[in-house]
Length: 386
Image (cartoon, rainbow, N blue to C red; front, side, top):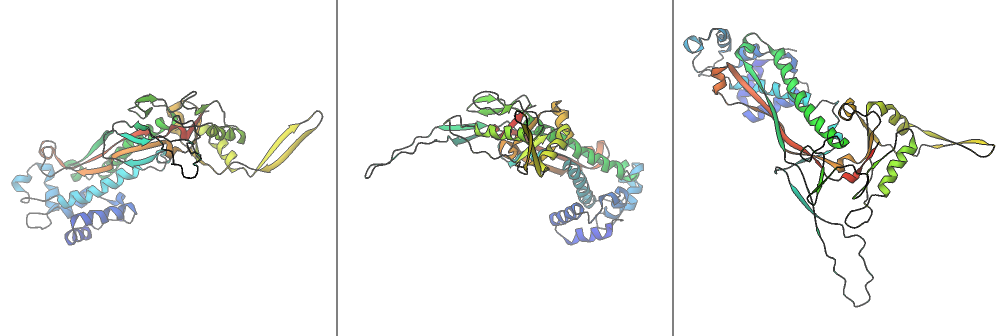
């Protein structure tokens, strides 16, 4: 459906700029306005104004190819309305690709906004079972506490710039622009996805990449086969008994400071594509058949599936990042892992009359960026099964 730029121009003039941009962005995200119907040339022709506020876009676009705009073109043109409206198109296309529903990272961590570039998160150790019998009239005993803390990596900034050139407007290369926006969103989304999957699977090898748990100044791999905790076990996923093995690992999970059990509740399995249908069969089964034998008798008993309805998270990226078709992970991923960010995906428009506008014929450009990092918060909340 063709976009009515004249109506957009009227709305822009009638509303406060920020409110207009927000409303246009919401309309694009709800698909009330189709970004695919956007035209750079038509938008410029209807949205570029002269110093008197009159539309002069057609003349301005016609003169783009001749480099004679200053001599013969409209006097003191304003491209701000064109930039604001095209900026919302750019933002929407970048964000749609960045938030691709095929990405699983958001299911594997909790997103936490922070104002710090790496943190030391202080806490207090569990005191364990220190309660005592208090006789009548006697004072209650005091309990001392010791300092406990973990550290998180420094955040990193990533971003890309999307320019709109004179040629893109004149030759109406809108399709090229939208493809470029999608690639920018996809690139930034892929990078974040890889970081989170590497953290959740233990593939990342350094603290700064989210591959280590830093507790009391010492770095540990998040999956351990010996003290101070054990959360990696040889356990191939075949049937419900393998889920039980992973569940029982939580029974052995204790607080390193007190030796007391840690209360952990598993919620999901993370599996490579090769185990996806196995996981689905185990979780969705309505009935289990248990077979056995005595000296001369073979028997089989049926009972309801005892496995809770755990979530199943899977992606081709799991195998791509781990090179394993048999490893799987089980637990509460959002309790174990975090994506700590200073700012989420943001698209910023370059100021008018910047140097690139003169040197490179870039009419307007947009910078997409984010700043964040992966952090292991509670490694004992997930079991690695190898």
